[in-house]
Length: 137
Image (tube, rainbow, N blue to C red):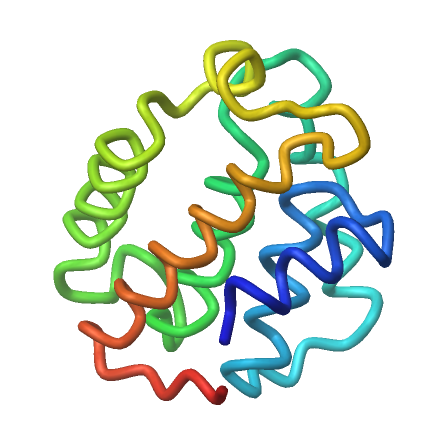
C-alpha cells in the first residue's frame, strides 16, 4: 500500500516528504523512474524550504503528472482539473496545503511530519485508483 511505503521511505530512509511520496509511488505504480529522476523531488520538501506548498502535495503532483501526461500537460485533456481536484481533496483531508500551516498540526518528535505524509499517500492512492491507475499492494 502506498501509505506504508511512503512512511517507510520517510522514517526509515530519511527522505523528505516529497521524495517519500514519489519513491513510494514509483514502487507501487511501477513508474520506472530512475534515481536521477527521483532526486528531482528533493527541493520540494519542507514547502521548498520556505514553508509553502507541502512537499507531500508536491510529490503527489509529480506522481499525477507521471501517470496522466503522455507528452505535455497542455495536451492532456482534463489534466488541469484533475490537479485542481487533487489539491482540493488534499486541503480538505489535511486542513491546508502549506507546510507552515500543516507542520504545527502534524509534526511530532521522532516522526517529523510522518502523519501528513501517510495521509497524503493514502489520498493519492485513492485518487490514482479513481483514475484507473494500478497501485500494487
